Amino acid sequence: MYQLYFFFLAFEEIDRIIQSKIVKHGGEYNCADCSFVSRAKHILTNHIESKHIEYGGIMCQFCPKILPTRQALRMHKSRAHKHDIV
Image (tube, rainbow, N blue to C red; front, side):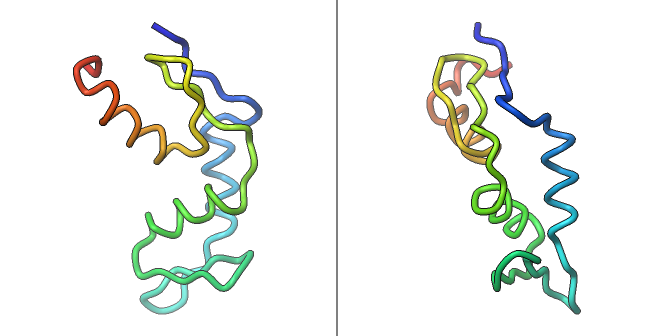
């Protein structure tokens, strides 16, 4: 089994940066760095992590593949390692 590896930032730091870039306006969430808007906060969170934060990616704990975001890691694990996940 591979160890989960963060190249530069811990998840807590990524979350802190993401939260600092979310602007809530009425029923919408706006990106502070661009014109992206979503009614779903998790969509904006994924947008910010993929477009505005560079941290080198996350290595899968089951194989040596490096994924660009946590959402990509979740998708990879659900597809490639569905039998490995406890």
